[in-house]
Amino acid sequence: MLHVTSVPLAQLPDAPLVQPETYVHPCGTQSVIVVPVVAAGNDELAVGARRACEALPNAAHREALLRARFLGVDACPTFGQKLVTEKQLHASVLTPANTGLALELLQRFWEEGRPLPLRSFTTPSPYPA
Image (cartoon, rainbow, N blue to C red; front, side, top):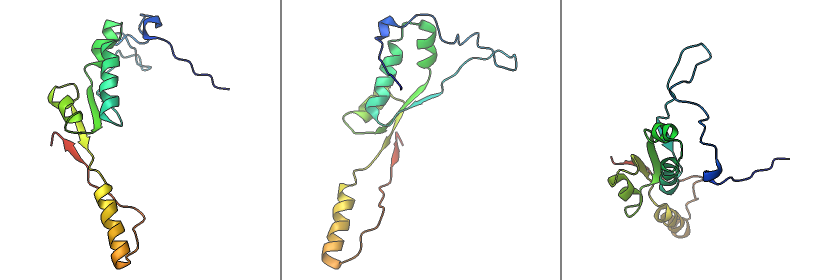
């Protein structure tokens, strides 16, 4: 049976899990661990991940992770786009609402009898473009 528990951040040991500057590859070569991107399913999760990295007690971990580009999805003008403008997120993906498309398809079905497609898509776009 799997048991999951949460531990407050303050109780985590300050000892690094992997020292970025001393990591040794199995081949014997030293390398630096790089996290180039932290991608999240929405802007709120992306900024939450960034804030969690900012709160890390280990300075080496914090510095290494904050070099990453934090990416979100939604790009709502009052939240996600604002986070990008304020440089808290590197970018976001603007996902248009699909309500208009759904209503249009239903109207065609009711008025013209056209069958509804199994799938319908809106077109996402990057922010900033």
